[in-house]
Image (cartoon, rainbow, N blue to C red; front, top):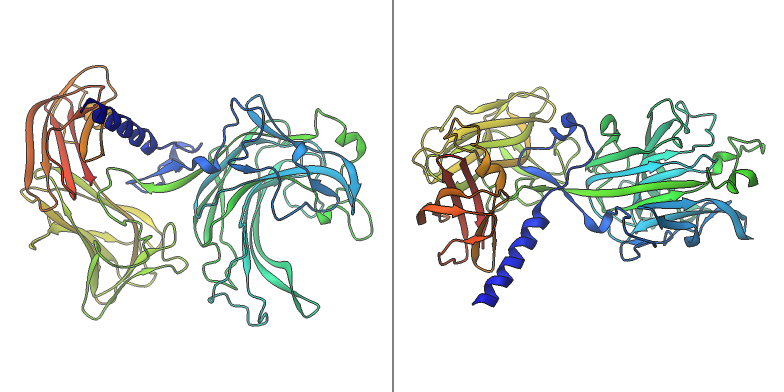
Length: 547
């Protein structure tokens, strides 16, 4: 028995630490834009701090781009990739063995893992020569979709996608750039179609780009480190940031595909040369780096302090299943009703907030989900929502699962852009409630990223009422429920556990919560449970556990 409990403890702590979220480098106003009930979770296989390393981690990274040797005259060479002093550097040099037009050596690494949607950021200092310093996302294969509109390209299907977070050039700037590349952040999005060349389908791509430029500050990008980031929100929207401050958004071109950025991408860190650096008449624009630049170790390297990638996931206390509609199918636990209206999960441009799908509600009709709750407990139902321009609003509300009037007045959705909405209520005597988003004839609206979270009950005036909520974790594994506190002091609380049917299956008064995992002595079977902890002195916590 002792051996089993030790294994359970290990599993519990692994689950606990894996579930902890890491926040991107954003200012507080930008962090507040994350939907309530959702959090950024680090994608470890696409992130690297480069600490305690002397070589590149080739489990995570390709030491050169697998499908691209580099643009003439600069070739990507693995020997120009270095990891030292807690950072990655890419050194630009004279090519050690010039060939096929390659006279310069740069470098590029690419993550072996890929991801669809998320937040991607890098802390980077550019080189001060006439080569790029970049951070971007790219598909690592060619995709095809029957909805791609390319009637002039029969038998030449296929597309790639690219999100350029930053391209800059510390040693110069093209003459066409409205914002100098040596003092700003050039960002772009590319939907790239297979290209017909000489009547044949080639491996080249025709880019459908949409770009934006912004000045980071009036200093050269090679003078200091900056954090450059992008939130790839959904298939039609990317937000961009410098040093945690929002700068602009880009809608990828959708004239060939209505949801162009809906496939996974890798992350890349690259130094390269461009075909526009020399004009057609041979004059510099701004020209390629010369021997003096490439031999100067004080300016010829791009430095990456760290790179971090995140996924947007529901928090553990969010009771809603498929609250972001990413299943793509309107099935249980979601239900709906119509009386001549239409309810569906939608992937169309502007109809979802994040990811691939949102919910489209055209009245009369509604979307619903039933939940088991703890009686007498405060909850908040939140959603990102909007109405269609020119239509009436839809409503968000909550009622007993068995029917009857709403527990609190419903909330009207009256914005034409996605915005957060909240319905705060107390469960009263109910053990099951129903959340809904509904409209009447003439209503058309959209909801996404729905959450239901149990709020703390304020039971004290000692300013300690947040201790249970903020410092107690409820974790589970191997048919066991454990409770642990991050505080050094002991907390006394009562425990109530409810089944999915709302029946109280366990209750214990005077349970002592410590900084060691304490197991609840009850027999657990498969299903969902609601656990409620209440401390008269330190507040309360409500969470769900699924076995």
